[in-house]
Length: 168
Image (tube, rainbow, N blue to C red):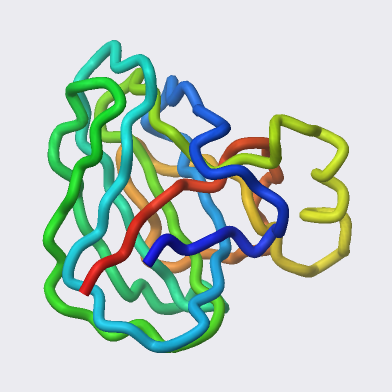
């Protein structure tokens, strides 16, 4: 299953974010139309990999208070390559979830879902006071995703929604 972002219009693999610090986590909300057992999670590198790195990747509940999946990817070392990591089988319920991704060593370039590179859409993603920001970033402790997240504290950003694939 290739979860699409909650923020609507996007073109898979159209955006590529050049990850330059292991203190920036990238976030995106996605909707699962049905519950599913997840046994594998995949990411795809972009057109440039300057330094090989693993990534910490986590999936959180809708309110961000439960970390449902917490893994470290294989070393991302080659361009335009899919990297799959086995997950201890976890059942994700239907509904909204959050994906978080942070590099362990930087810089690495990784394909992410995008808003077609438009800043014009940021306001609808983030402009409602005290409501979640559907895609963006936060500053974190080096190479560490938090135990919980507050989706209202994410800083909105173009091309920041991590593209993942979930398989049973």
